Image (cartoon, rainbow over all chains, first blue to last red; front, side, top):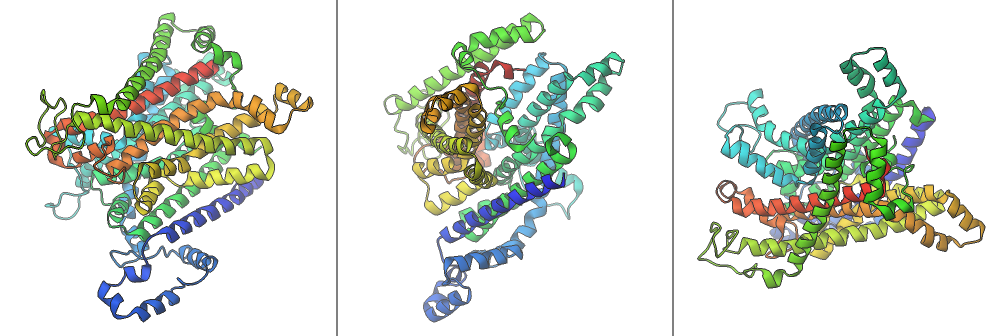
Length: 319
Length: 321
């Protein structure tokens, strides 16, 4: 077990190094000069020697490997650079919006998991029924519809036609303060759309896992000795069928992040995805690179966690 | 289940269930028969399912075929110039003159849809094929040579897979400027790991099969083995992966265009047409502007996914559950 964990962590080191390298290349590819970007054109024209001195101070004239090491040192201390547009640190901009994105992502993920697992279990229990067929067709359609089209349909149907939910934003502007109910109403559509977007694989894996487990001898034994159907499904089968889901959730993290960007744009949700989109519009490269770097690290960490968790839950992997 | 395995399962292939050549040749026929043998279930349902499953793949192929023909013939059959602006018909509702109405600057929606198909299909096919070429080369190298070659390639795969493709592509397109070639290259550069993992896994297990050992024993050269024996084992799962990557590439290009970073305007693309619907007025009152391109993307991606599903079933009946 320990050696497996050690091995898994050791092979993450080159991956992290690779992510750092690619991100640094992206930093270097950014057009524009960080010194000039933070000054007005008059200031630059007035003092070219200041620009030169500042560049030297910031190490922008150093050899590339020196710059890379300096960059890694800053990043490891949580400094992701400064926004060209807003003249504040990217770390702070991210910190201000992280909460909103986490709220949206977690709500979407939880809805997707709960609904996906329930549908998957029912589909496996009633294999080859209309329900089974509908669920596999449904999950195929859910994976194929572009998330922005799904978002637009949701706004059109639930916000415009039915008027049940707001079309976007996170709180009613006229309302005083923030109430939980108001936030929940704003959260419903974006989280729901995100959930549909993520759900397909969960349904498929739960169904497949259940079908495999249901064929095992110990389940036949349970059935033979008269354990009730529901108890077989939930306590005996589901627990084992869900094992692969830990890996699937980690594999889906990139899709979650991608979906988050698009959904936050459509629903004007004030999170990181929206920040990223605004930064792209304003060519605010430090912000964009920081977001790409952070998401890569996040994906790596989740993959590592999922592999470790899978090893803890399933002894077969450790051998 | 480790990550490699579950990636393989995600696209429905397992290292143990390699297709044998005769399955590939017999296709649907053999899969139908073995299906009936294994699963005791109502024969009527089996017939309906079998019918629907293969029917869906067939219909999808027909759909994509028609779409491809329409896309190729777009300059001839489009009723209007997709980029000609008309001040007299701005956001006009569908009529005999403009079957799908016109957009904010009076361009014909139907003509733009037809031209948009060219972009989506080109990006989808070109990106998927390039990704498959890169992925297959690396995958074969990793699988055949093993050792440090394998270790290096697999870490590279892990690194590339860590970057959520849309985010990097957004960044790169912002820096490099949007063009159809940039988009294809960048999508391929961030999609190849999927095919690499599949090819590596298949070649690893094929390497140990008797006929390859026999070939090696009689003195066949490494390259010859790669060419003759590996390619035939790798092709079926690779085709399935290509359909998946093609669907993903089309979705990525549409998302890029939707966010305003796709192919340079005024070139018509489905994603860019949907972008108009970010305005609530359009969303509410002009459904002809956003429903057709949305359905076009969803339909195309769905059809490609169904083809992939059909291929998978035909290639490997044992996978069917």
